[in-house]
Image (cartoon, rainbow, N blue to C red; front, side, top):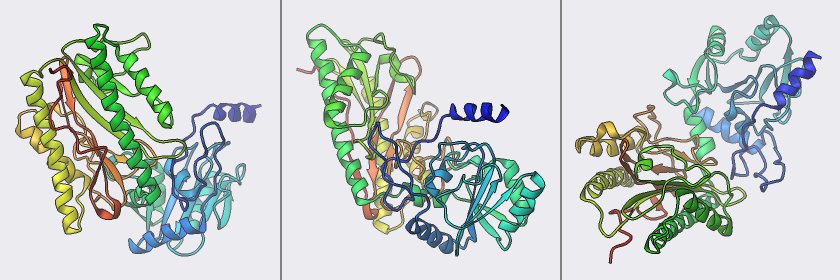
Length: 438
């Protein structure tokens, strides 16, 4: 009876999603179209070879994965495992720098790592677990795990402190897997980079179309609600072949200053005459594309107030400073870290006297998720000292938030095919347009 209840409870837990658009060597099949069940290939020889090359280069003896009740989404993605099913006990998997993986599983769940090649051992009590884990780690001196010192990169911090203590007690030095995760999970194939370019191009057109629809409704003296503009955008997404999930971001006036505002189903505020309109759209082409993620601001009047244009000028200068740094470093063949990109943008806003009103990092990784596992442009919320990598994408999106009044944010997508800097969806606005100007 207890076991049946446990299985039923576990079945209700949310499961991590498959990384959409993963390359063929990602250790799993390409994501299936919406409405069909995905398939998983496990840890393929190609994927394992790529991991082992990285481990040897970094002078690591292996990468140790640990999971308890699907606590580490990264492990499932890297190993190509289906996250569904009963996994109520702890499992361990060492991918060594050379040779076959070694697995440790509980005796009542011996198939939890099916799909990963190599030897398996089982345990029942904590005593046998400790003995078998010690055997699994024999000869391992430096091992990567999904953790981050001081939790500086929380997207990688999936292993609990007690497990880290246990592994260290067996003589292994633990190194963060953050660089491995960025390399293996955020680098994109040429086809994925092309998918992102197309998505950003379409999203750019959608932003302009929604802004013009808002202006048209004001001219006709029947202004649209925030929700109506969302629905207008979603209709375009459906025609363009986007994977419809969530709602495009639409905010008016004081709502723009709320970082995660979403209009209620009953409509929200009116985008009326002399309103500031902020549009934040993120979408991917179905079934397995890479996201385009752009933000722009518009003024629904004949001329933009001087304060809004001045604030916007600081934001646009900050965005351009980040891009300039990326271009300079790319020209030298040494891309900057995420922290350096953040500092380049943040310094502009701080020097303008609005440092306290820039409330978030400068940008996030874009890979198989809208907010990915790669390098974030961040030395504010977290400290991401990883260097940007060729064939990756990320956002640059500084903003100034004046609580209860308005926000200006400019978001562009930057991709690095072959290490070159490409701006996707356009270079970003140079001024806030007055959509009702004569």
